[in-house]
Image (cartoon, rainbow over all chains, first blue to last red; front, side, top):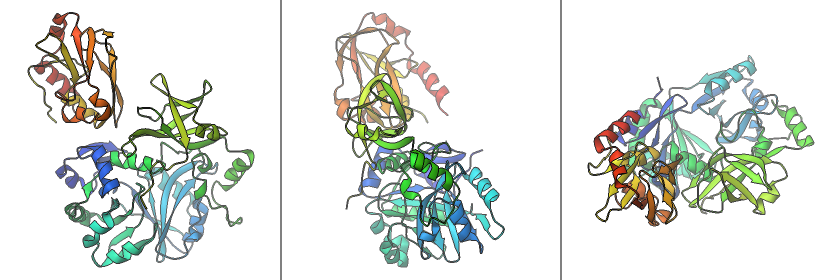
Amino acid sequence: MSERTPLYAEHLADGARMVDFHGWDMPLHYGSQVEEHHAVRRAGGLFDVSHMTVVDVEGDGATAWLRWLLANDVARLKAPGRALYTTMLNAEGGILDDLIVYRRDGGWRLVVNSATRKDDLAWMETQRRKDVMIRERPELAMIAVQGPDVMKLAAAWLGAAAPVVQALKPFGFVEDGDRFVARTGYTGEDGFEVILPGPTAASAWRTLREAGIAAAGLGARDTLRLEAGLNLYGQDMDPSVTPLESNLGWTLAWKPQERDFIGRAALERQREEGVPRRLIGLTLETRGVLRRGHQVMYDGRAIGELTSGAFSPTLGVGIGLARIDAGVEAIAEADVLTVDVRGKALPVKGMKPPFVSRKA
Amino acid sequence: MSSNIPAELRYASTHEWARLEEDGTVTVGITDHAQDALGDVVFVELPELDIEVQAGTEAGVVESVKAASDIYAPVSGTIIAVNNALEDAPEVVNAEPYGDGWFFRLRPTDTAELEELLDAEAYAEVAESEAH
Protein backbone atom coordinates (compact mmCIF):
# COMPACT_ATOMS: atom_id res chain seq x y z
CA MET A 1 0.00 0.00 0.00
CA SER A 2 1.48 3.29 -1.14
CA GLU A 3 1.61 6.28 1.12
CA ARG A 4 -0.20 9.43 0.11
CA THR A 5 0.66 13.03 0.85
CA PRO A 6 -1.96 15.51 2.13
CA LEU A 7 -2.09 16.82 -1.47
CA TYR A 8 -3.21 13.54 -3.05
CA ALA A 9 -6.74 14.80 -3.78
CA GLU A 10 -5.34 18.01 -5.30
CA HIS A 11 -3.21 15.98 -7.70
CA LEU A 12 -6.20 13.97 -8.85
CA ALA A 13 -8.23 17.17 -9.26
CA ASP A 14 -5.39 18.54 -11.42
CA GLY A 15 -5.50 15.43 -13.63
CA ALA A 16 -2.20 13.96 -12.43
CA ARG A 17 -0.69 10.73 -13.71
CA MET A 18 0.21 9.11 -10.38
CA VAL A 19 3.16 6.73 -10.02
CA ASP A 20 4.78 4.80 -7.22
CA PHE A 21 7.89 6.64 -6.06
CA HIS A 22 9.74 4.65 -3.39
CA GLY A 23 6.47 3.68 -1.73
CA TRP A 24 4.72 7.01 -2.25
CA ASP A 25 1.89 7.66 -4.66
CA MET A 26 3.22 10.77 -6.40
CA PRO A 27 2.32 12.87 -9.48
CA LEU A 28 4.60 12.11 -12.46
CA HIS A 29 2.96 14.83 -14.53
CA TYR A 30 -0.38 16.57 -15.00
CA GLY A 31 -0.57 16.11 -18.77
CA SER A 32 2.78 17.19 -20.17
CA GLN A 33 6.07 16.93 -18.34
CA VAL A 34 7.76 19.15 -20.93
CA GLU A 35 5.17 21.92 -20.55
CA GLU A 36 5.54 21.79 -16.77
CA HIS A 37 9.31 22.07 -17.18
CA HIS A 38 8.90 25.16 -19.37
CA ALA A 39 6.38 26.66 -16.93
CA VAL A 40 8.98 26.53 -14.15
CA ARG A 41 11.74 28.06 -16.31
CA ARG A 42 9.46 30.78 -17.70
CA ALA A 43 7.09 31.70 -14.85
CA GLY A 44 6.47 29.32 -11.97
CA GLY A 45 5.63 25.80 -10.87
CA LEU A 46 4.49 24.03 -7.72
CA PHE A 47 5.84 20.66 -6.61
CA ASP A 48 4.47 18.45 -3.88
CA VAL A 49 7.60 17.25 -2.07
CA SER A 50 5.79 16.12 1.07
CA HIS A 51 7.27 12.65 0.64
CA MET A 52 10.62 14.04 1.75
CA THR A 53 11.60 13.33 5.33
CA VAL A 54 11.79 16.17 7.85
CA VAL A 55 13.87 15.43 10.95
CA ASP A 56 14.34 17.83 13.84
CA VAL A 57 17.51 17.52 15.91
CA GLU A 58 17.66 19.11 19.33
CA GLY A 59 19.48 18.87 22.64
CA ASP A 60 22.63 20.31 24.23
CA GLY A 61 24.86 18.15 22.09
CA ALA A 62 23.06 18.71 18.79
CA THR A 63 25.55 21.11 17.22
CA ALA A 64 28.62 19.06 18.13
CA TRP A 65 26.91 15.89 16.93
CA LEU A 66 25.89 17.34 13.56
CA ARG A 67 29.46 18.56 13.05
CA TRP A 68 30.47 14.90 13.43
CA LEU A 69 27.59 13.40 11.45
CA LEU A 70 27.72 15.64 8.35
CA ALA A 71 30.56 16.33 5.90
CA ASN A 72 29.77 20.02 5.56
CA ASP A 73 30.19 22.03 8.76
CA VAL A 74 27.00 23.31 10.41
CA ALA A 75 29.18 25.75 12.38
CA ARG A 76 29.35 27.71 9.12
CA LEU A 77 25.77 28.71 9.90
CA LYS A 78 26.46 31.62 12.20
CA ALA A 79 22.88 32.43 13.11
CA PRO A 80 19.38 30.92 12.99
CA GLY A 81 17.65 31.41 9.67
CA ARG A 82 20.44 29.97 7.52
CA ALA A 83 20.79 26.57 5.87
CA LEU A 84 23.38 24.58 3.97
CA TYR A 85 23.62 21.62 1.62
CA THR A 86 25.66 18.66 2.77
CA THR A 87 26.27 14.96 2.36
CA MET A 88 26.12 12.37 5.12
CA LEU A 89 28.89 9.79 4.72
CA ASN A 90 29.81 6.38 6.04
CA ALA A 91 33.25 5.69 7.49
CA GLU A 92 34.58 4.86 4.00
CA GLY A 93 33.48 8.26 2.69
CA GLY A 94 30.58 6.72 0.72
CA ILE A 95 27.51 8.91 0.40
CA LEU A 96 24.59 7.74 2.55
CA ASP A 97 22.43 10.71 1.58
CA ASP A 98 22.44 14.36 0.60
CA LEU A 99 20.36 16.80 2.58
CA ILE A 100 19.75 20.36 3.65
CA VAL A 101 20.30 21.32 7.27
CA TYR A 102 18.60 24.40 8.68
CA ARG A 103 19.73 26.23 11.80
CA ARG A 104 16.68 27.17 13.85
CA ASP A 105 16.29 28.98 17.17
CA GLY A 106 17.46 26.38 19.66
CA GLY A 107 17.69 23.46 17.28
CA TRP A 108 18.23 22.09 13.79
CA ARG A 109 16.06 20.77 11.00
CA LEU A 110 17.21 18.26 8.38
CA VAL A 111 15.35 17.45 5.17
CA VAL A 112 16.52 14.11 3.78
CA ASN A 113 15.45 11.95 0.84
CA SER A 114 12.37 9.78 1.21
CA ALA A 115 14.01 6.82 -0.54
CA THR A 116 16.69 6.74 2.15
CA ARG A 117 14.41 7.58 5.08
CA LYS A 118 14.67 4.26 6.89
CA ASP A 119 18.42 3.86 6.42
CA ASP A 120 19.09 7.47 7.37
CA LEU A 121 17.07 7.25 10.57
CA ALA A 122 18.72 3.94 11.50
CA TRP A 123 22.18 5.40 10.80
CA MET A 124 21.47 8.51 12.84
CA GLU A 125 20.20 6.37 15.70
CA THR A 126 23.38 4.25 15.75
CA GLN A 127 25.49 7.42 15.73
CA ARG A 128 23.30 9.31 18.20
CA ARG A 129 24.74 10.61 21.47
CA LYS A 130 22.69 10.75 24.64
CA ASP A 131 22.51 14.56 24.68
CA VAL A 132 20.88 14.58 21.22
CA MET A 133 17.19 14.16 20.43
CA ILE A 134 16.02 13.14 16.95
CA ARG A 135 12.39 13.60 16.00
CA GLU A 136 10.90 12.78 12.64
CA ARG A 137 8.07 15.11 11.59
CA PRO A 138 5.79 13.03 9.31
CA GLU A 139 2.84 15.32 10.04
CA LEU A 140 4.46 18.10 8.00
CA ALA A 141 3.88 18.65 4.28
CA MET A 142 6.31 20.36 1.93
CA ILE A 143 5.69 22.34 -1.26
CA ALA A 144 8.41 23.66 -3.58
CA VAL A 145 7.45 26.89 -5.36
CA GLN A 146 9.95 27.52 -8.16
CA GLY A 147 10.37 29.87 -11.09
CA PRO A 148 11.34 33.43 -12.02
CA ASP A 149 7.90 34.89 -11.23
CA VAL A 150 6.94 32.99 -8.08
CA MET A 151 8.14 35.57 -5.57
CA LYS A 152 5.66 37.96 -7.17
CA LEU A 153 2.89 35.41 -7.77
CA ALA A 154 3.11 33.98 -4.24
CA ALA A 155 3.30 37.36 -2.49
CA ALA A 156 -0.41 37.44 -1.60
CA TRP A 157 -0.25 33.94 -0.11
CA LEU A 158 2.88 34.81 1.87
CA GLY A 159 1.03 37.88 3.18
CA ALA A 160 2.89 39.98 5.71
CA ALA A 161 5.89 37.62 5.44
CA ALA A 162 6.33 38.34 1.72
CA PRO A 163 8.86 41.18 2.03
CA VAL A 164 10.85 39.17 4.58
CA VAL A 165 10.93 36.11 2.32
CA GLN A 166 11.77 38.22 -0.72
CA ALA A 167 14.70 39.78 1.12
CA LEU A 168 16.18 36.40 2.09
CA LYS A 169 19.33 35.29 0.34
CA PRO A 170 19.60 31.79 -1.14
CA PHE A 171 19.58 29.25 1.70
CA GLY A 172 18.02 31.76 4.07
CA PHE A 173 14.73 30.89 5.74
CA VAL A 174 12.12 32.31 8.05
CA GLU A 175 9.53 30.74 10.34
CA ASP A 176 6.25 32.55 9.88
CA GLY A 177 3.80 31.05 12.37
CA ASP A 178 3.49 27.41 11.37
CA ARG A 179 5.00 28.05 7.92
CA PHE A 180 8.69 27.36 7.49
CA VAL A 181 9.72 29.20 4.32
CA ALA A 182 13.20 28.67 2.84
CA ARG A 183 14.89 30.09 -0.25
CA THR A 184 15.95 26.64 -1.41
CA GLY A 185 14.97 24.40 -4.30
CA TYR A 186 15.98 21.73 -6.77
CA THR A 187 15.41 23.43 -10.13
CA GLY A 188 18.09 26.10 -10.40
CA GLU A 189 15.38 28.75 -10.41
CA ASP A 190 14.46 31.45 -7.95
CA GLY A 191 11.76 30.51 -5.47
CA PHE A 192 11.20 28.89 -2.12
CA GLU A 193 10.20 25.71 -0.37
CA VAL A 194 7.62 25.78 2.39
CA ILE A 195 7.22 23.20 5.15
CA LEU A 196 3.79 23.42 6.75
CA PRO A 197 1.30 21.32 8.74
CA GLY A 198 -0.27 18.62 6.56
CA PRO A 199 -3.87 19.77 7.14
CA THR A 200 -3.06 23.26 5.81
CA ALA A 201 -1.27 22.03 2.67
CA ALA A 202 -4.29 21.60 0.39
CA SER A 203 -5.54 25.14 0.92
CA ALA A 204 -2.01 26.49 0.34
CA TRP A 205 -1.75 24.44 -2.87
CA ARG A 206 -5.09 25.73 -4.16
CA THR A 207 -4.27 29.35 -3.34
CA LEU A 208 -0.90 29.14 -5.10
CA ARG A 209 -2.49 27.38 -8.10
CA GLU A 210 -5.12 30.15 -8.31
CA ALA A 211 -2.31 32.72 -8.18
CA GLY A 212 -1.21 31.37 -11.57
CA ILE A 213 1.51 28.92 -10.53
CA ALA A 214 1.37 25.68 -12.54
CA ALA A 215 1.31 22.22 -10.94
CA ALA A 216 4.49 20.34 -11.85
CA GLY A 217 5.29 16.68 -11.29
CA LEU A 218 8.29 14.51 -10.55
CA GLY A 219 9.08 14.20 -14.26
CA ALA A 220 9.69 17.93 -14.66
CA ARG A 221 11.48 18.01 -11.32
CA ASP A 222 14.00 15.50 -12.69
CA THR A 223 14.76 17.32 -15.95
CA LEU A 224 14.94 20.67 -14.12
CA ARG A 225 17.40 19.40 -11.54
CA LEU A 226 19.51 17.76 -14.23
CA GLU A 227 19.68 20.98 -16.29
CA ALA A 228 20.71 22.75 -13.08
CA GLY A 229 23.49 20.18 -12.61
CA LEU A 230 22.11 18.92 -9.30
CA ASN A 231 22.78 15.30 -8.40
CA LEU A 232 20.00 12.84 -7.66
CA TYR A 233 20.61 10.48 -4.79
CA GLY A 234 20.47 6.82 -5.82
CA GLN A 235 21.49 7.69 -9.39
CA ASP A 236 24.40 10.11 -9.41
CA MET A 237 25.59 9.15 -5.94
CA ASP A 238 25.24 6.29 -3.51
CA PRO A 239 27.36 4.57 -0.81
CA SER A 240 29.84 3.27 -3.41
CA VAL A 241 31.12 6.74 -4.27
CA THR A 242 32.52 9.71 -2.34
CA PRO A 243 31.64 13.40 -2.75
CA LEU A 244 34.99 13.85 -4.55
CA GLU A 245 33.81 11.35 -7.17
CA SER A 246 30.43 13.11 -7.38
CA ASN A 247 31.32 16.71 -8.23
CA LEU A 248 30.54 17.61 -4.60
CA GLY A 249 34.00 18.55 -3.34
CA TRP A 250 32.65 22.05 -2.71
CA THR A 251 30.32 20.69 -0.01
CA LEU A 252 33.18 19.29 2.08
CA ALA A 253 34.35 21.48 4.96
CA TRP A 254 38.02 20.53 5.42
CA LYS A 255 38.60 23.42 7.79
CA PRO A 256 38.90 23.59 10.71
CA GLN A 257 41.41 20.77 10.55
CA GLU A 258 40.51 19.63 14.07
CA ARG A 259 36.88 18.95 13.21
CA ASP A 260 36.59 15.24 12.64
CA PHE A 261 33.53 13.99 10.77
CA ILE A 262 32.40 10.56 9.65
CA GLY A 263 34.30 9.69 6.47
CA ARG A 264 36.94 12.40 6.85
CA ALA A 265 39.93 10.07 7.13
CA ALA A 266 38.82 8.10 4.07
CA LEU A 267 38.34 11.29 2.04
CA GLU A 268 41.75 12.61 3.03
CA ARG A 269 43.28 9.34 1.94
CA GLN A 270 41.45 9.47 -1.38
CA ARG A 271 42.53 13.05 -1.93
CA GLU A 272 46.16 12.09 -1.34
CA GLU A 273 46.12 8.92 -3.38
CA GLY A 274 44.15 10.48 -6.21
CA VAL A 275 40.44 10.48 -6.92
CA PRO A 276 39.84 7.60 -9.35
CA ARG A 277 36.67 8.87 -11.00
CA ARG A 278 34.96 12.17 -11.63
CA LEU A 279 31.36 13.13 -12.30
CA ILE A 280 31.10 15.44 -15.29
CA GLY A 281 28.39 16.86 -17.53
CA LEU A 282 27.93 15.70 -21.12
CA THR A 283 25.96 17.29 -23.91
CA LEU A 284 25.06 15.35 -27.02
CA GLU A 285 26.38 16.96 -30.19
CA THR A 286 23.78 15.36 -32.46
CA ARG A 287 20.05 14.80 -32.25
CA GLY A 288 19.01 12.22 -29.72
CA VAL A 289 18.57 11.51 -26.04
CA LEU A 290 21.12 10.48 -23.41
CA ARG A 291 20.01 7.98 -20.79
CA ARG A 292 21.30 6.59 -17.54
CA GLY A 293 23.46 3.51 -18.20
CA HIS A 294 24.84 4.58 -21.58
CA GLN A 295 28.57 3.82 -21.89
CA VAL A 296 31.01 6.67 -22.45
CA MET A 297 33.73 5.69 -24.94
CA TYR A 298 37.16 7.12 -25.66
CA ASP A 299 39.60 5.67 -28.14
CA GLY A 300 37.66 2.44 -28.41
CA ARG A 301 37.32 1.74 -24.70
CA ALA A 302 34.64 2.42 -22.12
CA ILE A 303 35.81 5.08 -19.67
CA GLY A 304 32.62 5.37 -17.68
CA GLU A 305 28.87 5.58 -17.88
CA LEU A 306 25.98 7.95 -17.55
CA THR A 307 24.42 8.16 -14.11
CA SER A 308 21.61 10.43 -15.34
CA GLY A 309 20.46 11.39 -18.81
CA ALA A 310 17.56 13.17 -20.41
CA PHE A 311 16.44 15.37 -23.23
CA SER A 312 16.83 18.96 -22.02
CA PRO A 313 13.59 20.79 -22.78
CA THR A 314 15.30 24.16 -22.33
CA LEU A 315 18.30 23.48 -24.57
CA GLY A 316 16.63 21.04 -26.96
CA VAL A 317 19.53 18.58 -26.74
CA GLY A 318 20.43 15.41 -24.89
CA ILE A 319 22.27 16.05 -21.62
CA GLY A 320 23.60 13.84 -18.88
CA LEU A 321 25.93 13.31 -15.96
CA ALA A 322 28.60 10.67 -16.35
CA ARG A 323 31.10 9.17 -13.95
CA ILE A 324 34.32 8.72 -15.88
CA ASP A 325 37.90 7.72 -15.16
CA ALA A 326 39.93 10.58 -13.71
CA GLY A 327 42.22 12.28 -16.17
CA VAL A 328 39.77 12.12 -19.02
CA GLU A 329 37.93 15.35 -18.08
CA ALA A 330 40.34 17.45 -20.14
CA ILE A 331 39.93 15.13 -23.10
CA ALA A 332 36.16 15.28 -22.66
CA GLU A 333 36.19 19.04 -23.11
CA ALA A 334 38.23 18.66 -26.27
CA ASP A 335 35.22 16.91 -27.80
CA VAL A 336 36.34 13.46 -28.85
CA LEU A 337 34.22 11.30 -26.59
CA THR A 338 31.31 9.26 -27.79
CA VAL A 339 28.36 7.71 -26.04
CA ASP A 340 27.01 4.34 -27.07
CA VAL A 341 23.33 5.02 -27.69
CA ARG A 342 21.68 1.72 -28.64
CA GLY A 343 24.66 0.58 -30.67
CA LYS A 344 25.47 3.93 -32.27
CA ALA A 345 28.51 5.97 -31.25
CA LEU A 346 27.24 9.54 -30.85
CA PRO A 347 29.65 12.43 -30.16
CA VAL A 348 29.39 14.21 -26.82
CA LYS A 349 31.10 17.19 -25.28
CA GLY A 350 32.25 17.22 -21.68
CA MET A 351 31.49 20.20 -19.48
CA LYS A 352 31.10 21.28 -15.91
CA PRO A 353 27.45 21.50 -14.90
CA PRO A 354 25.09 23.37 -14.71
CA PHE A 355 23.73 23.04 -18.22
CA VAL A 356 21.24 25.85 -17.66
CA SER A 357 21.87 28.83 -15.40
CA ARG A 358 19.30 31.19 -14.01
CA LYS A 359 18.84 34.38 -15.94
CA ALA A 360 20.34 37.30 -14.05
CA MET B 1 -7.69 5.57 -18.89
CA SER B 2 -9.57 4.92 -22.13
CA SER B 3 -7.80 5.92 -25.32
CA ASN B 4 -8.91 6.74 -28.82
CA ILE B 5 -8.87 3.70 -31.15
CA PRO B 6 -10.38 4.57 -34.56
CA ALA B 7 -12.46 1.73 -35.99
CA GLU B 8 -11.20 2.19 -39.58
CA LEU B 9 -7.53 1.47 -38.76
CA ARG B 10 -5.60 -1.75 -38.31
CA TYR B 11 -3.21 -2.28 -35.40
CA ALA B 12 -0.09 -4.19 -34.42
CA SER B 13 0.21 -5.56 -30.88
CA THR B 14 3.40 -3.45 -30.69
CA HIS B 15 1.15 -0.33 -30.78
CA GLU B 16 1.53 0.87 -34.36
CA TRP B 17 -1.52 1.70 -36.46
CA ALA B 18 -1.79 1.17 -40.23
CA ARG B 19 -4.17 2.90 -42.62
CA LEU B 20 -4.74 1.70 -46.18
CA GLU B 21 -4.92 4.80 -48.37
CA GLU B 22 -6.96 5.10 -51.58
CA ASP B 23 -3.79 4.86 -53.68
CA GLY B 24 -2.95 1.49 -52.14
CA THR B 25 -0.16 2.77 -49.87
CA VAL B 26 -0.16 2.29 -46.11
CA THR B 27 0.41 5.07 -43.57
CA VAL B 28 1.89 4.10 -40.21
CA GLY B 29 2.00 5.80 -36.81
CA ILE B 30 1.76 4.94 -33.13
CA THR B 31 -1.53 4.69 -31.26
CA ASP B 32 -3.03 7.12 -28.82
CA HIS B 33 -2.54 4.49 -26.12
CA ALA B 34 1.17 4.27 -27.02
CA GLN B 35 1.79 8.02 -26.97
CA ASP B 36 -0.05 8.29 -23.68
CA ALA B 37 2.05 5.53 -22.12
CA LEU B 38 5.29 7.03 -23.45
CA GLY B 39 4.65 10.57 -22.24
CA ASP B 40 6.03 13.60 -24.06
CA VAL B 41 7.79 12.53 -27.25
CA VAL B 42 11.11 14.38 -27.62
CA PHE B 43 12.83 12.68 -30.55
CA VAL B 44 11.81 10.52 -33.50
CA GLU B 45 14.15 8.52 -35.71
CA LEU B 46 12.50 7.72 -39.05
CA PRO B 47 13.43 5.06 -41.61
CA GLU B 48 15.32 5.94 -44.78
CA LEU B 49 13.37 6.41 -47.98
CA ASP B 50 13.23 3.56 -50.50
CA ILE B 51 14.33 0.87 -48.08
CA GLU B 52 12.49 -2.43 -47.84
CA VAL B 53 11.03 -3.33 -44.47
CA GLN B 54 9.60 -6.63 -43.30
CA ALA B 55 6.50 -6.87 -41.17
CA GLY B 56 7.48 -6.93 -37.51
CA THR B 57 10.98 -5.55 -38.03
CA GLU B 58 12.37 -2.28 -36.70
CA ALA B 59 11.62 0.77 -38.82
CA GLY B 60 12.36 3.64 -36.47
CA VAL B 61 12.66 4.78 -32.89
CA VAL B 62 10.51 7.04 -30.77
CA GLU B 63 12.10 8.58 -27.69
CA SER B 64 9.98 10.10 -24.97
CA VAL B 65 10.86 11.73 -21.68
CA LYS B 66 10.54 8.23 -20.26
CA ALA B 67 12.19 5.77 -22.66
CA ALA B 68 13.30 4.84 -26.16
CA SER B 69 10.96 2.49 -28.05
CA ASP B 70 11.42 0.77 -31.38
CA ILE B 71 8.81 1.31 -34.06
CA TYR B 72 8.03 -1.82 -36.09
CA ALA B 73 6.69 -2.00 -39.60
CA PRO B 74 3.20 -3.49 -39.27
CA VAL B 75 3.32 -4.83 -42.83
CA SER B 76 6.13 -5.48 -45.34
CA GLY B 77 6.86 -2.96 -48.08
CA THR B 78 8.99 -0.11 -49.42
CA ILE B 79 9.22 3.18 -47.53
CA ILE B 80 7.94 5.89 -49.87
CA ALA B 81 7.52 8.83 -47.48
CA VAL B 82 8.58 9.85 -43.99
CA ASN B 83 7.13 12.60 -41.82
CA ASN B 84 10.13 14.94 -41.59
CA ALA B 85 8.04 17.51 -39.72
CA LEU B 86 8.43 15.34 -36.61
CA GLU B 87 12.14 16.19 -36.47
CA ASP B 88 11.35 19.72 -35.36
CA ALA B 89 8.01 19.04 -33.71
CA PRO B 90 8.03 15.56 -32.15
CA GLU B 91 5.28 16.69 -29.75
CA VAL B 92 2.81 16.35 -32.63
CA VAL B 93 2.96 12.59 -31.99
CA ASN B 94 1.32 13.27 -28.62
CA ALA B 95 -1.16 15.80 -29.91
CA GLU B 96 -2.30 14.03 -33.10
CA PRO B 97 -1.17 10.41 -33.12
CA TYR B 98 -3.54 9.50 -35.98
CA GLY B 99 -3.16 12.75 -37.92
CA ASP B 100 -0.09 14.96 -38.35
CA GLY B 101 1.80 12.65 -36.00
CA TRP B 102 2.14 9.85 -38.60
CA PHE B 103 5.63 8.31 -38.98
CA PHE B 104 6.00 6.91 -42.49
CA ARG B 105 4.18 5.62 -45.52
CA LEU B 106 5.01 2.43 -47.37
CA ARG B 107 4.02 0.63 -50.53
CA PRO B 108 2.94 -2.77 -49.23
CA THR B 109 4.33 -5.94 -50.75
CA ASP B 110 1.08 -7.71 -50.09
CA THR B 111 -2.02 -5.84 -48.86
CA ALA B 112 -3.35 -9.14 -47.51
CA GLU B 113 -0.88 -8.68 -44.63
CA LEU B 114 -3.16 -5.91 -43.38
CA GLU B 115 -5.82 -8.51 -42.69
CA GLU B 116 -3.47 -10.25 -40.29
CA LEU B 117 -3.30 -7.13 -38.11
CA LEU B 118 -5.64 -6.48 -35.20
CA ASP B 119 -8.91 -4.65 -35.69
CA ALA B 120 -9.90 -1.86 -33.31
CA GLU B 121 -11.76 -4.19 -30.98
CA ALA B 122 -8.88 -6.64 -30.66
CA TYR B 123 -6.37 -3.82 -30.16
CA ALA B 124 -8.57 -2.30 -27.46
CA GLU B 125 -8.15 -5.55 -25.54
CA VAL B 126 -4.37 -5.36 -25.92
CA ALA B 127 -4.34 -1.77 -24.71
CA GLU B 128 -6.71 -2.58 -21.87
CA SER B 129 -4.59 -5.51 -20.66
CA GLU B 130 -1.60 -3.17 -20.38
CA ALA B 131 -3.43 -0.37 -18.59
CA HIS B 132 -2.92 -0.28 -14.84
